[in-house]
Image 1 (cartoon, helix red, strand yellow):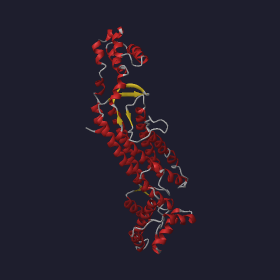
Image 2 (image 1 turned 45 degrees about the horizontal axis):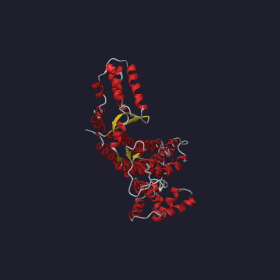
Image 3 (image 1 turned 90 degrees about the vertical axis):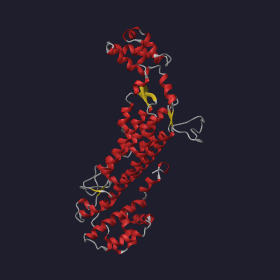
Image 4 (image 1 turned 180 degrees about the horizontal axis):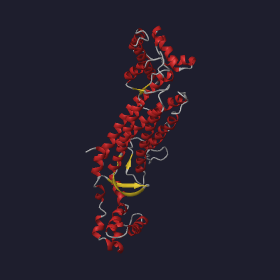
Length: 437
């Protein structure tokens, strides 16, 4: 976790004190149910909850000091709690194994992280929707392969992004449901020394579902799915960030990151206004995606379990969620304040000499009776002249002057094929699909 790319709410989920508080709740709830089942005296959970009610401070340093001797974090925690609570604490952890605590805690943390990320996505979706509606009919060039293709609107560009992030939210909801499971099943998951009712009770108290069958750990295919979804969200962030970066290039300059008063773009060149935020988002997306492969490799463990996954998850759990949280917040800010230049978009459209209308002429020639190959040849030979003139020539005028073209299509019919509004007749349909009626 790098403070520069972190936000407090998400970081707090992964703080050691927060982790230990979840550990205590798991142990105390389990002891509570064991008391109700008559396995331990009811004085045990009462002692735990009475101490907890005093709102104790978790002494992380003291627990770390014990772990330095025991070389086992859960045992260190249990020893420390016993020092605070007294003899009744000996009934904690009855029939449980360390993974019951560790895995269930990780489920809680990932579920909490997912909740914050879904709120982030909601904020981003709101910003994209607002700007999409604002520029619903703003004409711009649609590009494929980085080359001008046909007209589109800037609103449609943003509508695509909205639909993509809406899908991301749906995936994250599914991933949250899959990861939010509780395992309190004991060594190798057989419930030999603990009643399944304890697991059900703890799961209910923590807002989790029960793991149908655990070995000694919650199966890591669940975690692989979760981190894969985070990786997809990161890729969607990068997709939109790269679009902004391309649009900000000086040769294009159709949109631009907000440049605040007093901001400096370069230590050497005072004229610079660099797309630093979206470049940063491209880098952060790589960091989040870097968690996906290790999560996939964690699925394969020896027999009922080993701990090869543990060190990995101590990294990728906080790093991926904290980084993605920051990235979503940053992208929301970029879209919210994005400087958009409709005049430049129109200028870029116009300087193409009408090339963006070539398909309509192609189709008109085929409908007039020419073969598709001949139609393509006629339009292309005139279009290439426009390309070579750097847009100084007009495709419409060249086509009008081409005897083979004018023989098939009248000048008035040709002019109609260069109507920009023609390309936007389905904008309302697309927006209704994306945003609702």
